[in-house]
Length: 195
Image (cartoon, rainbow, N blue to C red; front, side, top):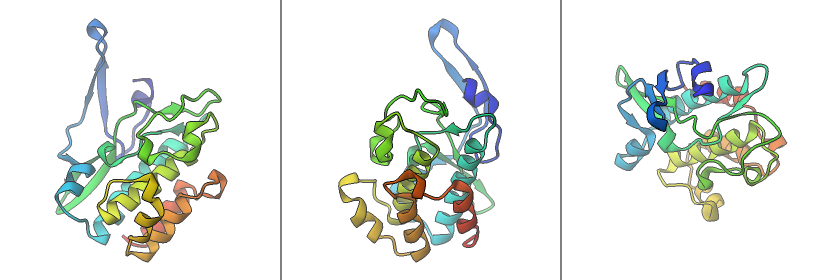
């Protein structure tokens, strides 16, 4: 609740309010049409659709990562947590679910999000904004090939991505060493070339 109430960005699900009556937290947010997961279950996405939706996700993450005084790490980027709305005839994305988000500190819970999207260091206390970059790479791969992520087939799935620019970006995001992964700002620059 605390994190959601302090974050306002067009690519983040709009938080309206919350109540904790009778010990059951209830979040009130804007209503979205669908989720990326549901859309991928229905059909493949065009290169433009992948670029536009992933750019929306990258902009949301960049906003969280640039927060002062400390960055916010989402820690649960997945196709289920990217909600969709229509702008004219184009699907647009908004990042939702701040349940696993954390202000970057030294005390991080281990592997808070879906394990199939998680960076290797998500299982340690050494987490930085680069865990979101890794998850973003997994998400971009999923959007490109329309297959749920499988850590045991990660290389094989990345090789299935036909758009060369996406494949190269995914490989950079999935570097084992977090310091070798690009920033969300860099990713935005790359994706803007395709939109």
